[in-house]
Image 1 (tube, rainbow, N blue to C red):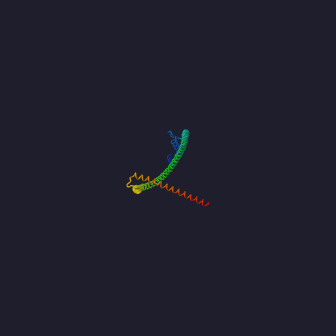
Image 2: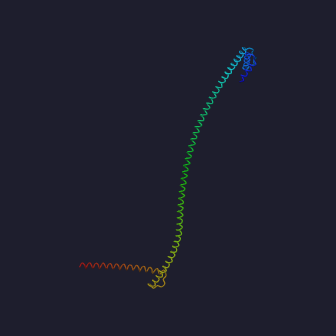
Image 3: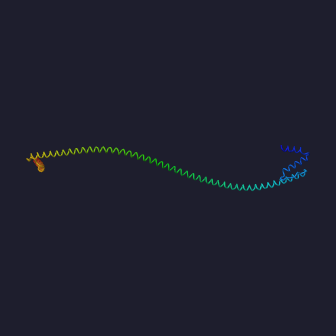
Length: 253
């Protein structure tokens, strides 16, 4: 839109088409040439000058393009080298990461095994603890049972001790009564022996030595009486035997 207006303005400002073309060429030369140039008076000179400018611009562009190409090539080389270095670093980083992951997995596996072993030990310890608790419970029950038995035996022992004391008192009482009875019996025996001695031997009050002599005499008399009885039995047997002999002889006759 602006160029169309510039063309219209150029046509209005110039008197002929040649002037317009020449003005336009000088304008392009001015815009295109990097160095200031004076306006040309003819179209041929303006075209030649514009071609020179365009050729210079082309060479300059070629040089710039070649420079940019060389720089681009150098840059590509640098980028390639940088990419190679980066790729190698990435590769090494990946390898390190893989190694790290492998070590991590190995460490994690080792830790998992250790945790499993610890859990197994904890479970074993827990089972042992349960067994110990059960054993202690059994021991406590056994001790309680034995304690009950001991208490029962202690009660029985106390009862037995009390009974023993009662029986001992009764035994002491019976011994006392027996001693009294023996003393009484001995006194009665002495009294009887004294009466017997008085009746048999005409002795009044006899002392212990006299009573002992009387006992010996009574024993001797008893022995003599027993011998007399034995002799009487022997005589009776002989008589019976003689009578049986006579009876047998009479039977023969």
